Image (cartoon, rainbow, N blue to C red; front, side, top):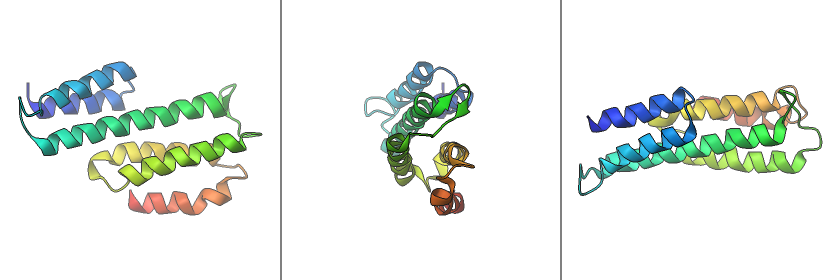
Length: 139
């Protein structure tokens, strides 16, 4: 099986929202194919590592939102200032690491959309409006 095919399979699995463990396993399988004793391609190994890291960070952000902000199927930020600050730190780190990477455009787009959706029509929306626009412009 092609080295690229395994990495592409991992990406497709992540985009199809398959189980995190299965996606992670597929990324790790791809990673094994680029190690020095196999394909010995440091650039591709770095890309797989970055994709895996972005995927796991995105999943962590999504889980954080579900646990902290979803109540009865809707976002509720009332009384969640500390959690909003934590969320802002998480997405800031995500964007600083992955924004502008052409191989991670879909992941960046997904996190930006979640970020915007979470704060839409809330008192925080005005605070983050410029951030949303800046990220959109850099996508």
